[in-house]
Length: 378
Ligand code: MG
Image (tube, rainbow, N blue to C red):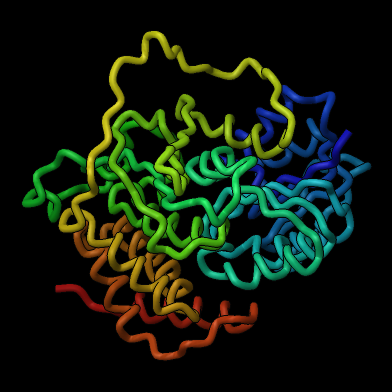
């Protein structure tokens, strides 16, 4: 039986991870759960799973914690949870860079970091992959496209990969006339055509910045330059990734768009089991379509590629500025079409080209947040 900790357990990925773990009860023991703050939902998770440790990132107290669970509180709580429990697998469903120190702790202990959010690899790809290499830790992708690539790459050599293709549904505005986008409302942006996710990532799907970030994520995960990673518009969200090899052969990974599938794949690797999750009815699937991405409709893609090429802390700034800009859109402060230009403006103001250590990453992150928050829109 493997031990597992779920960080960000009340979020979208966290709750789906616990759903999967409930189906695989004989294979895993949950030793740690972590959330942003103590809530009735987190309390019921702790009561149900009885982990050795529970952690909350913000200050606060537990009202109904069970006696066998120790509570860790504060900024370093997640990292301490990983160090105290040293689980075989740590699932990161934490937002932003909240889980970065804990991710490094898991990798330093030679464990598996199952990473669902893009930020640790986008902002700290060099640091995270180096830590894994030096300490024998493993990074396992849970992000659906990257999990798909990872499945396609099994048994293959990196040198034989000629292109990695990740798919995009095109988000909420894939068929909206470009001229109507400045008037797009928050409510419209939050209607994703195929996936159910949190609000921030749903807006990122509408701007396609999620794909910009995923290009950088894939580049670090699979050790290929960003120029070898491309995005294709695939409306059905059935094919999650394709890998083309030197001989022209292409492998693809298909499944229903349900996050529990990549989560289960990451947890059970290298085994495959049936956990009664939805399956594709391949005989009734009908047509699957693939279209090129229109970079005028989606300027986020070339901007993300530019940040990846510039290297250093530019990807940190890209990610942090995007978070602030999306927040400003969700708050009704800026228009939908101002999100990506604000990110571009913040990148243009960035001068520092460092970003190798965790301190430098967090400093660049803070600078970008402050800068992007202060940028005025007409
Ligand atoms: Mg994804």
